[in-house]
Amino acid sequence: RLANLRRELELLHRERETLIVTAPIAGRVLTWDVSHRLIARPVERGEVLMSVADLADKWQLELNVPDDRIGYVLAAQQTIQTDLPVRFRLSSDDREKHEGHIAEVCQTADVKEEPGATPTPTVLVKVALDKLKLNDDAQRELRPGVSARAQIACGQAPIGYVWLHDIWDTAIEWLTF
Image 1 (cartoon, rainbow, N blue to C red):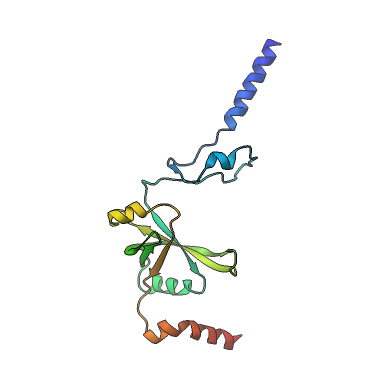
Image 2 (cartoon, rainbow, N blue to C red; image 1 turned 90 degrees about the horizontal axis):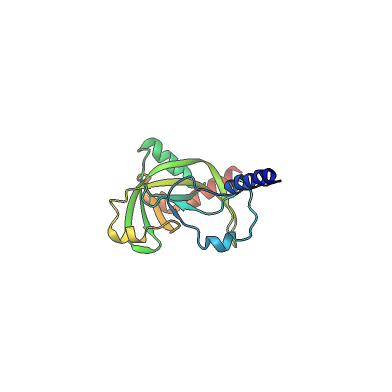
């Protein structure tokens, strides 16, 4: 009976070890109130439980570019340079402009559904930031999840085209279909 209880205890210890969840990277837990969100909640293998980020590592800005605008970015990458400059303002500090450059453009579009808006396909563009070039105020305001407004420098075009290209594109689409 004692040997059987020892085997059962060993099995329980092994089962308990499999319940320990470890993050794939060292960093800081970003998810708010983790204990409250996970208490008595059944989880499945592969399910995202919390977000962890290494705040000391390189930062990047993720832009959701509408798919009807991504063609301009791709054309500029082919003609001008692959790492196009990007200017952006953090929503938490709208006074300062900051700079980065395109590091990667996703190859697929994703449809984002927001409440109260029609779903629009967007392409993810990752912008590399040089944390050393950011001023002290920006570094204090820089945190995961902060939104930003950005402009990608895709070259020059006549001002009439810049102002009216949406109308032009809509007219061409209407006439061809």
